[in-house]
Length: 309
Image (tube, rainbow, N blue to C red; front, side):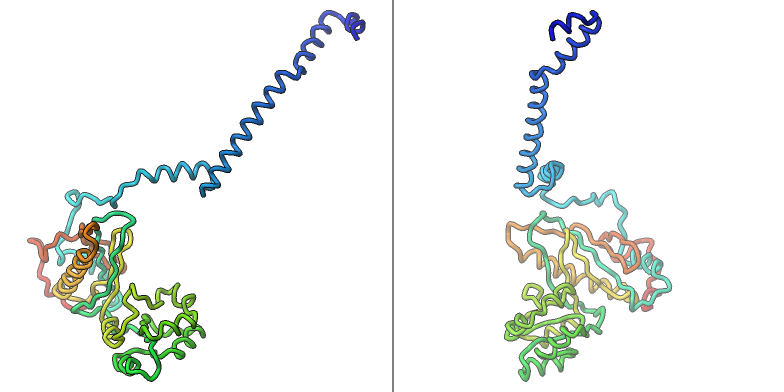
């Protein structure tokens, strides 16, 4: 081999020497070793990320960023917002709802709370002085032949009993908007397995929502003329009146609702502080108007035309 190398021209010998040096195992081995170490480190990092419940390093970074969230929900500065008296807000909302049935479109109240995140929420039921709807269809699950069954029928329940309700629900026929149960029928309700039918519709009786009660007759009467509400993301939304209500009727309903929500907040743990921060009035198809707490303003016209549809 050395004799053959000596016979090559000078330029060819230089080219062979450069190729031979490039194929030496030392530098190539170090490059391969570095590449393998980098790949192994990447795999180990991915395993750690997956073992901690993250899908990727990007998700891990996003979760770290959530630690910077504020403990309380962010609220707008009301001083920078235009607010309206109740009569003025009603007048604008009725203009947006022109041509719609006053018994179909509803006034809606949005109560924004100043509260902490991830804490207990307000949920309750109330009966308003001016009923929004008396056409609610209510089913009552109670022992057949009992006193509660007779009282529930007299109160206006459309479906009463145990097996009658179970058969109707399992058959796909749910002719009611609310469902309440007597404590004595909870075991039968559990055995019937109606949770998969009523749960997704929000109709499953629950003690927390006040739909598992001893006095089913009074609860039927309240549900027919009352309303339920629940806090979500520091806001309580509930229908507060029909579009044909007068300003005085809407004011009475709002007063009762706000007083009840204040009681609900005060009944919580002393370490849990919830305060009403803003009250917004809107409608089914109209925008929301932030209220300033006044009934009328200096620019409010005569409200006699707002009585009735």
